[in-house]
Image 1 (cartoon, rainbow, N blue to C red):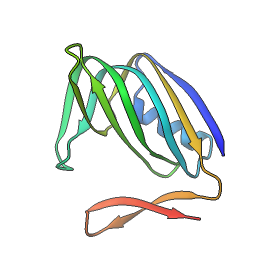
Image 2: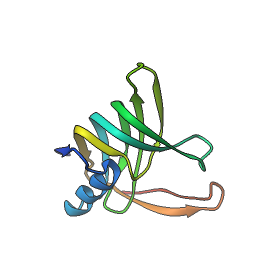
Image 3: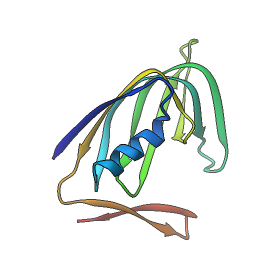
Image 4: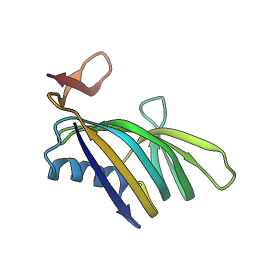
Length: 130
């Protein structure tokens, strides 16, 4: 296994930056094991699988997890606002870093993550190849 660690900076798009990193480094399969920092804008999709919500303000990333590859990235995020309430969901592009975000990926040996359409869910779902 290979560990990748990198830092995002103010104004970076969180999801797009992680995708670009995976593509630039040819990552075939990785787990996001840590993501901490803060955002000023968040776009997250709720459990309906349809509705996105935009949050503006200062939010701490208290948890972030998911699967990452050059072909497909699927991340969930939990954010705490200044009132200490936590909200979370499916991370969407448009989530912008405030000061920093420290990202750690663990690349998996002998595994490839790709995607295939699942008619049951209506989404491109994870396809795992060994």
